[in-house]
Image (cartoon, rainbow, N blue to C red; front, side, top):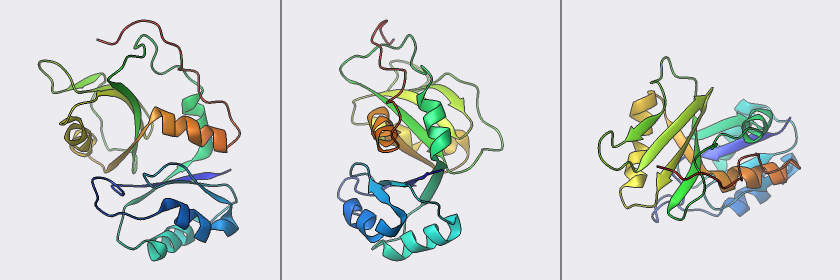
Length: 186
């Protein structure tokens, strides 16, 4: 099964910039496909993870955390309606954060950040290494997403739901069940 590669903290705010499409081209023997500009690749041919990690680290012009995820697990996540009752509204972004490894312990969900007043990040659920939530388009939201490392006790990398549905298209799978607009987010 395919492997999804997520690079943490690249091409954000002008720091640690590179062309992910060039990296995908350099990994073409593994049938690598670039998805977006945030350092997300789908490796469609079988690959040894240790060797793949070493190859990617060698090809990057800087050091970066490399997170792997089985495509099968991601497709399973996309097949469920994880945003039921949340609706689709301007100013809200659906996201999934991928934990670099399983946490020793994790807080109960839902979680709102900040915990009082109007939330900027709302964690709806955690399923294995996936943390599903919403964030408001707000200047402080990126910092709030960065705090998920402390909340879950492991490094986390985040992608929008639309990036995950693009990954599903690369894998030849449907884009997920949670596209319905319905009730409003609070």
